[in-house]
Image 1 (cartoon, helix red, strand yellow):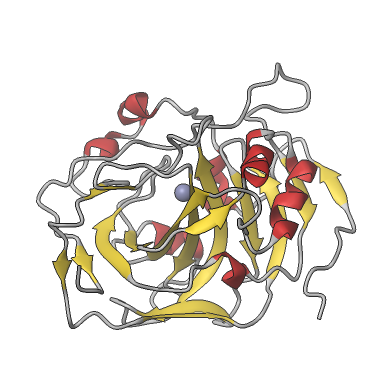
Image 2 (cartoon, rainbow, N blue to C red):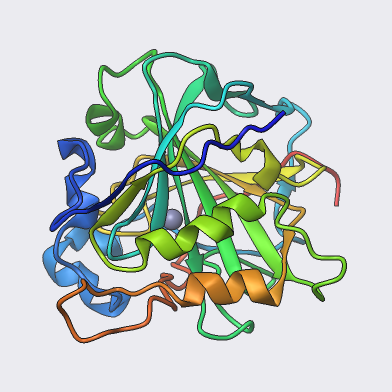
Length: 285
Ligand SMILES: [Zn+2]
């Protein structure tokens, strides 16, 4: 079955016309994370993300439930260049595309996913494992619709969001598979900041590894406004991407069509202090 509907419209919008809840994410900040605390003092807060995960110090918690990812329906709507990343947004009026289990009491609905990547393979991810970065990291952003009325409300609450982080590692082209090439093939449509195109029928299940073993900790958004509202689920097993596919991410621009071109890459925040937080593992090391 063809699950991907070719793009029907390509809108070149002067500004991303996203819901107001996400507008903050599109507001005027750049990738100088060491400066963010001036406008967003919470940047120096007690539960900031990302972090370095010290695998030997993570605590195995036998009470952690397996993560249940129910992405049965393909409720994707659009793909856009936010000026900071490329983002795919989902219809989130019900729990058809949601996660549950893990450390959660309620299902959390998928709102959007986006990526962080580097100019070279030696950097790009936000979380690091034992000090080691990956070339790219996927973030699937979900919200607690049982407890909060809107995504914006959830994003401001300490238990409002659940973000699943998936590492991407580069393998030689022959065996590499970012299973769905349709995603990387769609990137050309959103090269410039503020561009958005229809992107329906995409099931992000194809972006998950086989094993759903994870680390979990309490953290924050990794971009302004840096709200401390995220329960992080960082998957242990990376997925694979080819060099060619990663190059397509690096073709994107931080800048609009009229501006001087600046390559979109190194759009990651470095690891933040743990400040006494415990990282729990769903698996025995
Ligand atoms: Zn992110």
